[in-house]
Image (cartoon, rainbow, N blue to C red):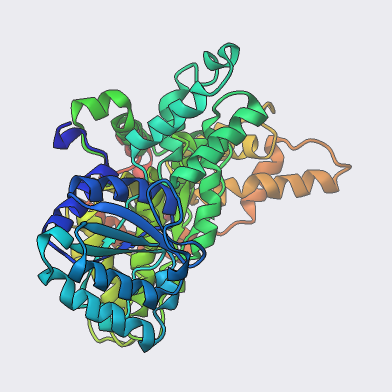
Length: 524
């Protein structure tokens, strides 16, 4: 098997083999998947010429089959003494995979014997070499062991491992179910939807899907990720937006660009070597569809939407904010393919440039975000939104952080009509005969949210009038009472438009924008 065909776990297992051959005495493996990780560790130890054993506080030392070897060595300090004796007088090379040891390392009576062991084991004869591998859900090791332990974060299953788990679940089915369990091209989606789950979680999701739907349902599998996000408490999970991109009126340039980027996630694109897209920065006037677009992308692409609340991750304690961010980024990487939404980043990063009014917290957060965006390897698609782009540091918009920066202006007349129709569909009135063009014409200078708000306003008007169905005249009446943002913030919008020239790609189609620019400028 070549290096290019190795799974992530096999690659890490090969590193463990090399570390054991180099006589590293203490390895600290960070994982929540004890059983799956141990299978790789047993193989890694054998490949390094060692005899692998396990140890826990219930059974003591056991061989690879789980047979108990010495019930008197349940106490970890007694186990350390036994390992030391084997190193001095034994004739076998042993690796001790210790499952519960991290729970005992809060006392110097346990830490000191382990530290002494780590100091002496590298010098023992080759024929009696010994090594200790600690399996822990946390990477926080006691400072006394920091100079001795090599910390390794065990990866979650990658696509190849998930595919093997899926195949095992399907192969266990009766013959009559096996052919239909993952048909109609759902196999790739089922694999993608489980990336980010542990092996046990993926297997349980596939089993539950088979029991409830008699097939592998990617939606059922992906829903398990919501529980993973809730467990970590550093991100917000947003439920899918009904209608997807059809809920967003206009923005045809942006929609076309997003449709092209979606193809990069196909198996054909993966085989072609096409890199996963990084994301887009949406800059523009408040209420013109930036946040709605972020929600719609996740629905259209059938992936989770995760919102990063930078304000909530801030802490008054030095270093804790960056720690929260790193934890959030680790969760994002584990989830796999998803849309990550940074909403109104200019507010969250206020203070990252100029005088540090927050003690440098925003500056540290900016550094952590920029590093992650530049170096990340996963398939997360980042959507960042901002109303006031002038408040953002220039390095945030540099090419390489995002694939494209889009400028979202006030909607054109064509877009306003599309927004009216989308709002009607969202309120269950998609079949009504409404003159959307007439409504759009009287809403020049309205933001998208102001146009969409006409429908619920019209519903109130019609309900008060004997609960009849709404009409075009109701929408026109609702429009008369709105003072658009373009009137109250005209100077600010003009400044933002001036910035966008040559710096951002228009999200709206050029032909639509040309037909309405002069009319809107007269309103300002």
